[in-house]
Amino acid sequence: MHTEFWLEKWHNNDIGFHRSSVNPLLTRFIERLNLPKRAHLFLPLCGKTLDIHWLLKQGYRITGAELSEKAVQELFAELGCQPEIANIGPFVRYNAGPLTVFQGDFFSLSQSHIGGIDALYDRAALVALPASMRLRYANHLREITGSAPQLLITYDYDQTIMSGPPFSVTPQEVAELYQAHCHLDCLEVEAVEGGLKGQCEATERVWLLTPR
Ligand SMILES: C[S@@+](CC[C@H](N)C(=O)[O-])C[C@H]1O[C@@H](n2cnc3c(N)ncnc32)[C@H](O)[C@@H]1O
Image 1 (cartoon, rainbow, N blue to C red):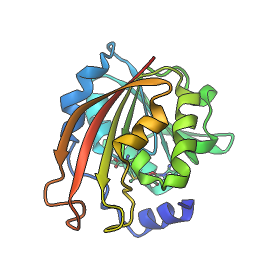
Image 2: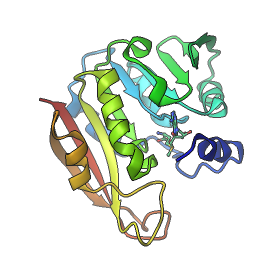
Image 3: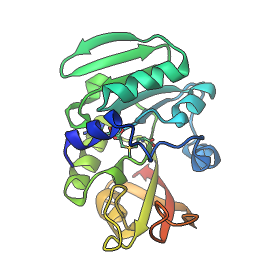
């Protein structure tokens, strides 16, 4: 999936993936990450999700990575904060208090950019990428975040009925991507109400990945 695809989506405001409310699966299952107070969470491919608003209200420190300048600017504007902006290598870093977003390509991000991470939250990041990019994504995520636990949300559906994104990521693929380094615990399996994009039946799963 090329970067232009996403930049065009943001440019055209074609952002059906952006939820108008906080993800209930996050609020329900975050306690399973056993986070310390003021924990540092990393959100790959974060968009301008309202989940960030909620996580900040819980007192967490958040670092995100997002390709689109428009998304990042809207995130800070909607939070009502004025970020400090700096050029850091290939990134533009936006920071306001406990929130930092690296605007640029996730695959260029290094551990030294984001610092120590207590946990990861992947909603619509892994499933935003085509199969050919997902192993590289999972490996890079592990490389830059070390042994942090992860809350991961996936969809599973018949990929011949609908093309992604979001792409179908089966439990078998989650195992192939993460099992060598993590214990996988499926916390919830539920049918997507009304089908994915109203087009096809899909199952949504919440995973807790705990490094071995
Ligand atoms: C499906 S959206 C999900 C956004 C957010 N996680 C949410 O739940 O609303 C995927 C996001 O990943 C961003 N993205 C895609 N490829 C990226 C990359 N290589 N580096 C950083 N961000 C990327 C897109 O711009 C888009 O905002």
